[in-house]
Image 1: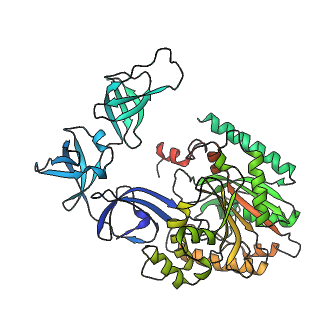
Image 2: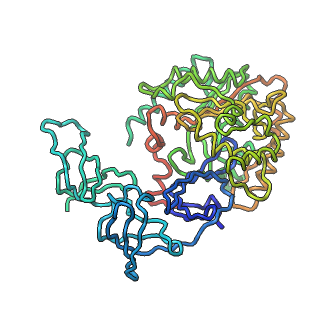
Length: 187
Length: 332
């Protein structure tokens, strides 16, 4: 058991027998009221999102999870296919639970996957990822307005709004949560 | 640094001071360090130490609101007053809408009640808003009672659910999980309110949520003959922005409040490391027969500025937010 106030992003819980992972947490004090915590929970198997506001002192059923290294192989439009590096066993994780991850993960790269018993609950992607610009529109000549932006597509298919000076083939750092451009990386 | 936010703060303070002055309010400046606080079990406090080689030492507290001293000023002057006060609330999450130190705009209008405070606050908002303030932060305010909100968004009649058992039944009907051990009416109410009512409140205009349940104990007068208090909260953009009372003036009720709430506070914090501030029940004695009836509004100034600037977080609006100072290497 865990106190609701101790639940953090990434904490895995059992709710009515189903595993959920906390994706967001916010403390709230209603006017002249005691401490509550607002949780956004996600079911890894169905993608269902649950919003629940509990008293910080309420008990919740947490589950013991384990992180394992998994190599991302490919997706078939419905499932991500991974290989556990410890025993080469292949696993599938439904894509609908991890929106846009097909545009963030790179084939052949290794990610930490959180398991509860044999069920994969969460795929951990880095907060910032370096991408190569695969397609970029040419900047319109004479467009010198400060702050002007355009859209580019990365090698993984992610579309990102970037400053107009970014060219095809360049490397950019992107925030994977907000999908926002952070900086150009000259390497 | 965020120049637009720094300029906006300066402009809004200037406009508001001018408005209060032209409407007969006196600006006051009361202590941030206090020997005692009004007991409020739900607000965690900061304590510090006064130390003197000759006079000994004494624990002092950073005020969570300037209420205690402002009410003493009203007792002495009998006038409408306001101030922008630094306020401090411990253990709150350092997040988009919270910083442990913030600026409170608190104004008390004498010979007014909480209904008149709605019109006063609308006028204040209308006259002082920054250029470019989004429409949904501007008056006219939408008005709704807590009972109406419960009926509309959670489908139950608050007038008929005054017992803990009945309210519990509604919470279960709504699908909430309740602890096995009995809990207060207020706790169950807050569960329903936070899960079903607050997230669905309309945001197209500021909303005055009026008549809070009497079970939520505070220093607002009770509504005669009905189970509510003369208290409203203002929501704007879905965020709790201000709290208003028709101030309780009965010294007997205030003394009882002090004794009961201090006892609750001390028993709840007894096991933890939390600060138990001193409370001085003789505060009730300032409410003599000459004390003017009055209504006070406490408004989160930083949040208002954030909303007027069209921002979605306090970062930049508050200079040097604690989250930045903590992540800059001075970790807890």
